[in-house]
Length: 311
Length: 251
Image (tube, rainbow over all chains, first blue to last red):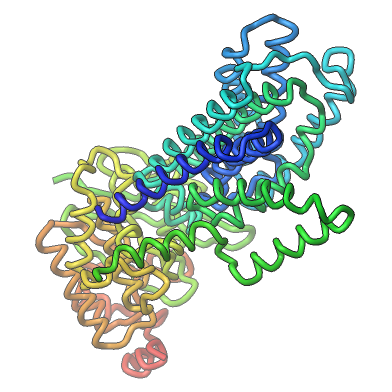
């Protein structure tokens, strides 16, 4: 009970910090960086829910992000739907793609799912170029309307989406449902011997993961006001996985911190110019070498243990 | 009373090897039945056929009047057949209690509102009450075996299949574990099948023995009858030198 109260206080403190940050320092540049970091947070949390809990690594999360973003772009620019339809529509579109890839590959053990996700994302990126007359090719779709005209307002909306996503997925992960996903990571045969339909749970968790990634993609489309095939890039998926590792795999809340930390680090290192990627990579390697369980979630657990101990 | 499990004419071959040949038997509710046989006799394969982990070629398995042919393992488990594995397969990365709770999450038609309390009670019963919150990786091999049984019991099964529950245990642990099996059998009227090599414990525990060799049933009867059965002596115990064989088995 006490632990739960500390968790809640920690979460409230974090949200308050993120909300006040742009008010204190101001500037559209900072708001922009924070908006991107919050959207990456949604992607990292949704990746962790499926892959972190079940241990089935998804190397193509960008597939769902791209599908969500293009859905938003098409609906908004070609069909004239208001931007508010983008979120539910992109969640549904990403869900459809999750079923197309998950249904055949998650029945199998082995690397099929990871490879199918990776190639799915690469294929989608190529398709956007091949069907350039519809998709705008390399240029993508431009002229997407903003959801909220004030940049600060949109940032708060994205932050709220991140909070809702994390709260929902965390509640699910800590329920019996999440326990089953973690058990699948442990041993599929024992799960079956316990009467658990392993395939169903893996596909359902992928669908949930995809839906939130798609929603994040739609947010990104309405932030950039354009979408391009670059959204499907493998490097995006890898960045998200790195954020989850830094945050603490399977903790759900850790990847939020991982995402914000890495996006901010990328920006802070702009001063290093050409050395930036080198410094960034070395920092990551050091973090993962000394803290193989990640940085954010284990640190929070230690803080909690200290606070929880009677004085 | 109709049989809980009715197996008839069961066959399975892997390539040229006939792993199970024309096996037929039935299990009455409340029995403890042992499956006896030398290594490679097809005992674990038989379990895999009964629980759907491996599909059988021909024959039938009827549980509570329902034909199990073609059902996925999780469906069969959901109907009330729980099994343990010869090699312990705990869910790594989870606590002992969480491991036991998962055991009760798949069964059909059981009340899950008090699952956490029930899992705790089961851990107490198998002697792991004090270790409920430890990571499962820290358990000794004997404790992992107890946990396997607690996990299997969390599903409230009608039939429990134990695959060499005593393998790798010391004699003290074996006594505890067989007392546990006896007590769940007595308290809950649970029907139990068990595969075992440790003849001594096994013979004291079971009501009836089914002996297999090279995939075929060679004898069926009370433990006293089975140890004197010529086919069993020839196949398993070997030239009547029971003591010597038991020694090598234990080794």
